[in-house]
Length: 394
Ligand SMILES: NC(=O)C1=CN([C@@H]2O[C@H](COP(=O)(O)OP(=O)(O)OC[C@H]3O[C@@H](n4cnc5c(N)ncnc54)[C@H](OP(=O)(O)O)[C@@H]3O)[C@@H](O)[C@H]2O)C=CC1
Ligand SMILES: CC(=O)[C@@H](O)[C@H](O)COP(=O)(O)O
Ligand SMILES: [Mn+2]
Image (cartoon, rainbow, N blue to C red; front, side, top):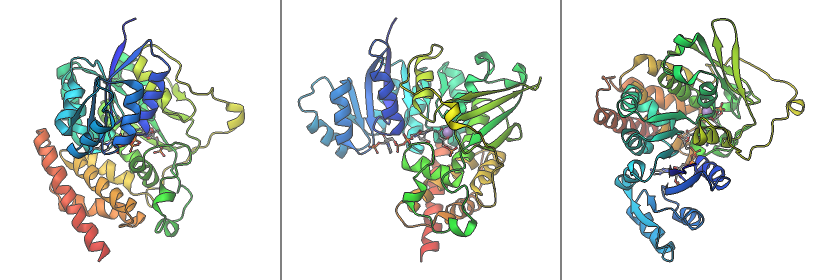
């Protein structure tokens, strides 16, 4: 068996560490070519000592200089920095597989570089696809990259469809996708209780252990909104063909309904090592280190409709997809700015959707005809969102 050689973008994060945990269990299958991080050089240094990548990349020159000092005695690891360094390792000839696990818009350029270089791209960074939708999928088609979904719901949907039909589910007899949502930590909060929840409470997901940004997105249901858009692009479908089911146990990771009335579901413990191992080894199955599912202990599954009044972000995302063009990029940018402000204690939880709605209202939708257009609208939306936050906090 020839080894897969990996670049892991966002190696120090929740998905990055879970990926390395799967890799660690299979030294005969996987080798690490490159690891990247944003600012946390100390954490990346520890990983470099264990996995001995040929290249390590930090987002800034300053962080790269620190990493270089920390790896003084690890001469086989070359240190690079910045967007150019990230794109280099994402497209390098030496790597055949790229885990795209940088959080947010910062992941778009390196993920796209991996796509354009025709890699097997394991897509966790949903924001990249939400921002650039059709352009991203066109790049996949042009390069022949193998795009495999890692987001747990999308990986579940992928597992429930014939692989040759994932971009044409109607041809496989698919009638609907049932996208599951946990409902987040505030599923039972009243609108009044939601006003003053803290960042620590928002980051305490009931079932999953994840980075801060996606944890807040789960709490507002924006994560489900981003995932709705992600599913539309990955599976070439529309929001009307996707129904969100709040399933608080997070054991069913999503379902696919067929014309004959069959509904196929993928179940598993809420542990990202399952979809990661599925993507790394696809079409084979390998040990992911995940404990077997104990359905007797779980006992019951519950399902509810999402409450769009308490959690308007889901509807805002559906509206952005409907508006098309640059609207999803604007939605994503406004959300990133609002979540960051909330995490810094500068914005109330309930004002996250307010900032997104105001930013969307203030920004003209134009056709998403190039990545330059996407990046310029992203920057403009961030400026609007920051202005709106400043107005709310004076
Ligand atoms: N966590 C999960 O279970 C799931 C996550 N996802 C998606 O996967 C992605 C990663 O999520 P998660 O692992 O939770 O996030 P984390 O915040 O835990 O990790 C983010 C990673 O990205 C790096 N990073 C952050 N900013 C930059 C930047 N500007 N340039 C380069 N690298 C950067 C971080 O480096 P540093 O450590 O130095 O800050 C870290 O390695 C997100 O898009 C998320 O939506 C999808 C499904 C499930
Ligand atoms: C693990 C994963 O894929 C997350 O996106 C998870 O789905 C978050 O859970 P909810 O958004 O359903 O709360
Ligand atoms: Mn998910």
